Amino acid sequence: MSSKDKEKFYWWKKDKNYYGDHRLKALEKERNGYAFSILLEKLKCESTPYLGTLKYSENRAFSLSELAAVVDMPTKLVKAGLDALQEKELINVLEDGTIEILEFINCVGFETGAAKRMKEARNYEQKRNKTRTNEEQNGNISGTFVPRYKSQDIRDKSIDNIFVISSSIIDKYLGIGVSSEELENIKNIILKAIQTTNASVDDETIDKIIKELWINKNIINPEKYVIKWLKNLKEHE
View (cartoon, rainbow, N blue to C red):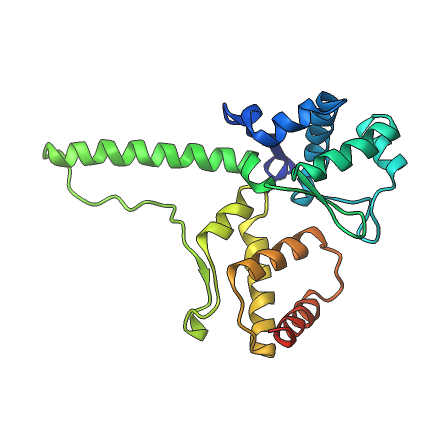
């Protein structure tokens, strides 16, 4: 796969009622509210490669001055803006200073060069299928067209489908740039951890694990990391 195939392009999706959201309306009523709205857009853009999570590095969050430099806004304005955005439930600032963009998944789009060609191929196959169907109905040809692409859950049948990554979670991460190969690798890590700990997991837990492993790709032993996660989960059940 060429570098152009792997190149990722993100965009923010806004429906026609975006600025009618009561939270944004309340935000813009604040002093410097329109500047806070711009701050939110900049935070969204900066957090996109990390699935809506923003921090300086894996080990620490941004300081106010560092974040102000990144978004190119005065430090005092950024401080007031973060407080206002959190109060209006547009972001969440964790205890360690990590910034989370709420509803991130609902407002981001993604495509690669390879995905674009895949879409074009699908459209071609659909048109071809329609043409062949019409020809069959008119008695010109015989045979059945088999679609090349199928969507499916990623599941492990060896444990009676106890462990399933649902289509909604798959679509969510494929939509923001996680490859099917990465998802398959993460699925295998989670599966081994489940077999080791005998823990039961729900969609929310799977979602959190996928996000954590995809963002923190430099975790030395991801399988051990997930095993520890699931053991802690069992202890608190």
